[in-house]
Image (cartoon, rainbow over all chains, first blue to last red; front, side, top):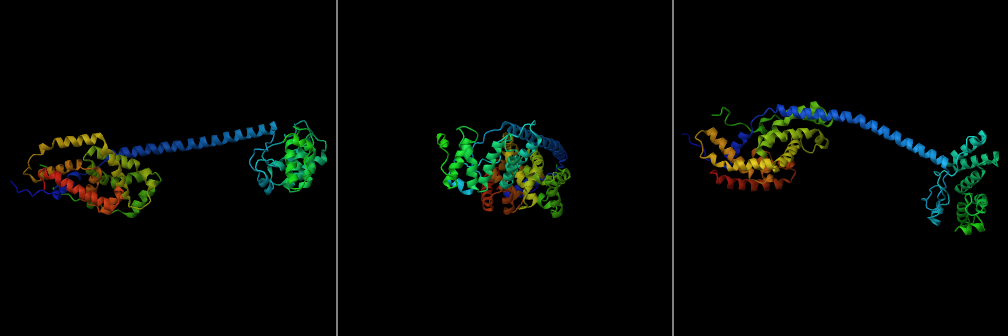
Length: 225
Length: 200
């Protein structure tokens, strides 16, 4: 019988190291790993165009919804909320300091007037649409003012003359021409309470009178406020 | 009698030094999700991972599972590789984390307990040196099964794999001082356990 070396922790470690260093080819595991990775890659390859198609569909759908909503808004002629709306950045800067709850100039995004129906005269329709575009879809109140003036000059008794006059007054406010704006708004404020743009005109006139641009508001304005 | 050589160099020293360019190509390929890069990574490191997992788990089947899990997760994991450690350390760190899950698994624990229950069959050392060494290794393996996971990791990495403590700390993800403390406690506990088995 051979003499065995004295056992120790180091000898045990050495023996354990040899025992566990058995070579293994791992071919089966390699095949499984690669097959799994290939499956995942194939799934990713399939998922990518599907996701892209879904994204395109979502964009088309949302665009359709937005266009439909815009069309409905165009036809529905909704009233513009001016008391609770957020502050309008296009209004004169000091307006926000005077009153946070009253926005003197309605936001451009709100459609205040419907386009003329198709059976109106073509010239009036075109003039109105041009002014409407300039007023609501550009950042140039001067251009909008000119367009409204053009419409009113051509069609002083046109179907949308009141709307044109009111929007023209708004353009004057935005341009800082406060006295002409007050004059333009006064007919609306003098109308019956609840009438077309009566309330908004009263608010604007009050704001203008605080700046000395207008006399006291019309007596009918007190009935609402 | 076994025909295997009685001593075999550590797998650490047996592996060739890593070729930096080849490793970089593998990393790039893995990040791009290329299968050939995954195959190359497997061929390069699967033995290393398997041996480490085997030493951490005392269970060849679980070690094989760890190998599969490590390389299955490698493509995704490599996206988080920042190059702060070398690729092998990064892969071994994944292996250690995966092995922890298996270590905690009830199956591994059960096998370990069965192995402890069968210790009496080891008996006295066989006169044949090879058989004796094998039994010595199995006794250490049984003792390793009774160590806390953290101490076993430190012991296997530093003593069996012969890694430096900084590298072991990179793999395990703890400070180097912690590795040394764990190693100290692991050695002391193993000596206690092996004395009971007649090893000093």
